[in-house]
Picture 1 (tube, helix red, strand yellow):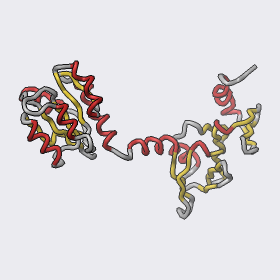
Picture 2 (tube, rainbow, N blue to C red):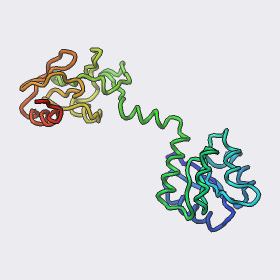
Picture 3 (cartoon, one colour):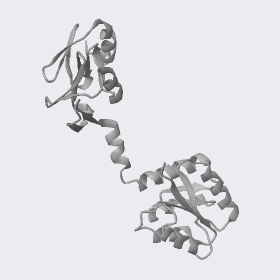
Picture 4 (cartoon, helix red, strand yellow):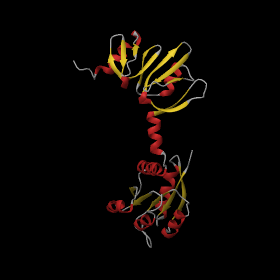
Length: 241
């Protein structure tokens, strides 16, 4: 697991000890440096000794607002931790990520660090979208792999010992795994089993009949007695009588 280093600047040793202890309890983070000297702390963060900075606001020589202002063009997320909550409103002026009131609540600290981690991770939001809606489909021989949007799947089918996925553009893939295994791996909220040999994308159902469903592509898929009531319940709330 990647560890994110947290820099700590506070002119009160006791406050630093509290933060060091709480950060040690949060998985994925560790203290990169801690100092009571804000000038030294700014130099440490500029030299890359930490990925994230937590700083007090009121300190002799160099305050947290000024430190944050000097880091505006960096990628370092800054979190304020202060006993003066009325200063929180100034955070937006220097692009501060969050404000914690002393002594920091452990859960709020974890939330702030998680938010900082997301800001640092350029691919975080891309991965969120990919993991939610996309999947890599590979054929039986492993020659043909494609990143596909799960919403564009029409249906999955089991034919004897082989399983297939049919896309909205009529592309077809012969899968590397058995039908039930592939369906489980897909983890799609849209794919619903309608038959021992078929699962359909409920977003692509145009007509729901007693014994079959017709997809937007014109494909007609049989619904077996085993899955009939489950399918009915899915569409019940959308039914207009």
